Length: 568
Image (cartoon, rainbow, N blue to C red):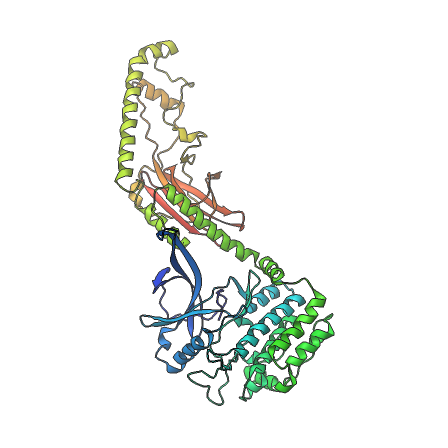
């Protein structure tokens, strides 16, 4: 079960699309990150109130975790339901640094779930796939360190005793790269005890039924014999062999042939596949892969020590911090995208707060984007009576100022006309009254030198085209038209330049160019005044090296909402 990565290709297409985030009991489901044969895996959040010294609330904090919810159609299937209950019964008491912790087994309505530890990182299968893409092997020190850490977790589970000090006899039975998690902080954790065997199981596996992935089974599993912890040791030996050599030692053309190879347990030493491996590594791996359990190490603790000893010779300073650095380098792009998404949230919170919007710091980026979109679509005026009053007051003041300027101009016009020697013909030195300050280099809230002509790209608008009748009424008048205007009594007959507004969001954050000119700041950008007409927008995030361009149509006296999802 991939706890933190949407790497599993299995998706049940018949499941309805969920509107996330949504509340699920006391948890909030943020994102569906994987779907497996038994359950859906969600990234979730548990919010809690932080009291101050007086006992009053001083804010909220939230813990991210994973919700594993059993498939709705499997609840009526007794076998699957009992397997799910077994996983909860077996894993909830376990608490070890190399085992994914299970916090709660519960029910919300008709849904049953496990609340589990969230690990930021990737499963080992994804790590190996990334290295295969790069045509790089798993470093020997990484393989030995990961193997020794998993061995610690297995030994803990094998030795675990209940509150009455009775051995529980836990056997994982599905040790495989998919169930080994490698975190960005250097953690190595074993997960998914869904088919684990324990003395406390509600239901024991029927004789002749094989559980687990064929490539990683032990010979005794493939032959349906009695199992103990040394079966998991064999499976871990197979995983370590794969890390060292880049291939599964028992994999064949089909599952039947694979099972036969597992039963025979014949394999060449790792050094025959990868030169330079110390003989001590060969001995440790080959002993764990012996066909008969009695020929293997006595337990996983001994196997882990056998892997750790050559690690001390090869890389004596290699620790979990070294693994963290290596993982962060291997998945730098993914980490950057995650950080950018979180940075986007912080910037959106700040800018929405400046706009007077009521926001909750615990809201997800998706919620904030949705909130921003809804706010934008409500129109260009500020929300609430206070905002409306301020805008009305601003218009009244502007109107009064225009009247005063007009009266002064009218009274002064004869003297001004005489001093300039105007006789009704146009004077090229006079400013063009039809061009607003937005046509210059004013760094105010206006943007856009003029509407762009029709072009390719995608337009994003929620307004009617009927409102755009004057959208392209921006044309430079010739000197002759100015002369005509002067001859008609000095009144400017040119059509008005009309404006609209843009509010721009993106996920993750981005800088924005409007018609080739860089806008100040980054997304979200609110109340951007632009000329009505077609404009070209370019979003770009230099940190993630992603960009997107589009053409939008701004309608006069309307606010257009542009909200884009940027992908690498």
